[in-house]
Image (tube, rainbow, N blue to C red; front, top):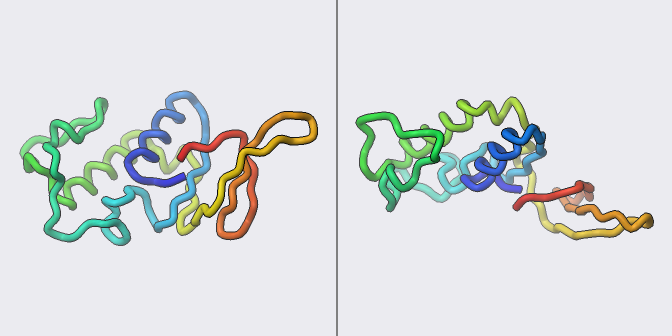
Length: 130
């Protein structure tokens, strides 16, 4: 649940394990707070961390970028990571979907599952990553 940086990394890890996931994101695209249209950023914003400390271990910044990446550079960096690992193609992504409740449930045969409420619709899954 959630397509911010943690959600993107979870999708990458799951893909590496050969596990397909369904992602629910309340906005119209990935990138969480760095989403240019619906995130919590403004045009002149930069990170408060250097590009050295806010890069993924398998995806380096392009040369000649600002030491403190701008919002546009951060957005491009995240998009290039998503594209590099083909996360949009591998996983199912449902945008403009709000998860309002998650419950751990037991079935009659004593197995467990997770019940989530997405926009008023109850869905069942074996596991959930938040």
